[in-house]
Image 1: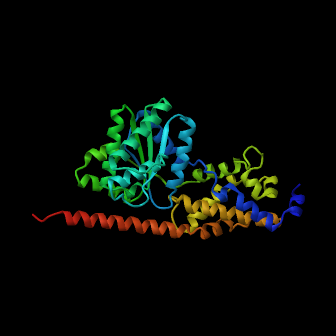
Image 2: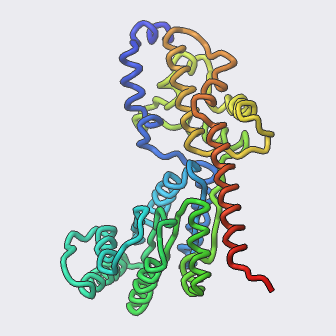
Length: 344
């Protein structure tokens, strides 16, 4: 069976496979331990009707993918809930009218003409109608790139929150923003004495964690082994890449310790290390592509395979940049605190 595959597989076939493979095309989001942790908190917030959760993480940690996966899980468990995603677009809305036009686009309304009171009424009416049709008096609003929100944006959200409340519809917001920017936004609200807005929209801050253990990698690698493409076909993701090695018993799950050791050695860090999702998945894709080319030629992976993948993914550079960003943020915060103090 393995020999026939080698005879019929070509470099062109492999390229076509990679272009369509879900791991490379990013058409399927895998459930990871950090995503499981976020999902449990979001689910709790929805069940308790508890607005005010903010999820934060550094660049590359996988916030947007985590948010998308969590929304899929929520949709699966609570298919009737009215759920929307509002993207702050990395810029603050300049006017009330522009905000409500943006919000109408978020909730899928195509009619954007009218004066500000008309637009606001249209937003609220549509949300109330959707909630009542669902049979659940609840709107869940995920806000991505929340670090771009300004004071005026939070006041807009408060208006919607209050308007929905008058119609007995509860409004739960889930914010996702990049660290340290989102923490600066929350501090801005406190500086402006808008503790009402903090209490309503940013009372609980949860730092989305990076991967940090062999166990995390085992869970991810096993998920790649277990997923099938097309779904239900019996063809596993890893198997499609290395069919001969798969037949011989190779499983990506068994590579977790070697991958983790390569990360530790390649970054010069101790085994207490946190590594971001973006570079981790890039390293996985590189490793499997390299393994696929070798499998096609009837060769096995060398001991240096994971080290090459980690180096290609620039994991060490990513960790270095994150450390620098944390230092800059701490220095900026210290400078702000110093400038705000006065000598006695």
